Image 1 (cartoon, rainbow, N blue to C red):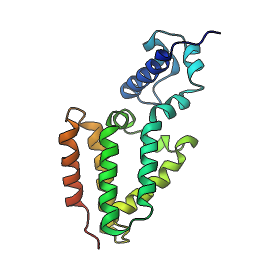
Image 2: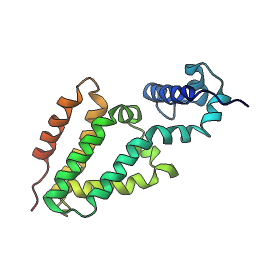
Image 3: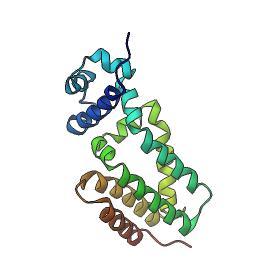
Length: 181
């Protein structure tokens, strides 16, 4: 069997992202993706073992950046942790806002998939860093609101240029988070 051109692989990823944005991950079939590219479902399966594998590859750069942020936060506490968490997560959310937009509302289901299971623990550590590792309820609530708000905002305001969105998100995050020592 002759290998398809590398462009087909990228075209499939692009088509999958578009379909996920329109009908959601669960609402998109491999046949939908194939139809959009103009190929067969077998061609999609040649490039990707499953719809889950396609999603994993689509999300891999964002997950790698999230894992790198998690590693950077491991040795920080207090205000340095808050600052690094806010800046790192804003950078990630702005950079991957199209991926965030296409999966909005489906994160809880996606976290149940084995390939994404570790994201829940990273999210919990990120919330703790946003709270400055404080056990105070107000700090923990603010941390979750800011984290979720950043993701939701990036998914919603795709029309705002990165250079405007990033400082706006950081300003809101710094105002909302409880200062730590």
